[in-house]
Image 1 (cartoon, rainbow, N blue to C red):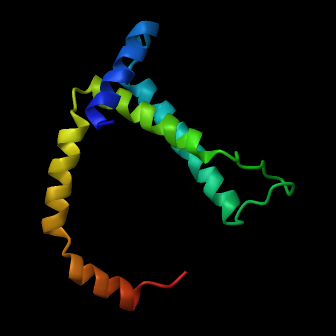
Image 2: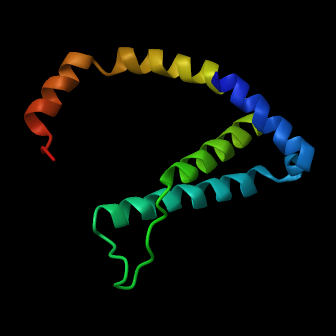
Length: 115
């Protein structure tokens, strides 16, 4: 599936439920909430938050959180008339020119802490 197709599916889904009446600020706030769910999952996974010691267990299926974030992101892009596929391809081209691959590989190999 192409990104443009995903945007069309989400738009149709929204319109069928009249969710297209929600404001951009509401969609954006919901998007941030769902991104925070991924953040909580990461904090538990990395041991910063410990289930059973005052913290909730992270959801086992983090893919649902990513899907929710993606859907809300598509909704917001639709609302702002952004063709994400086109915007993404243009941005990757800019980033390829801006961030030299070899320079970054050397930097990461020599300077960035190994995990």
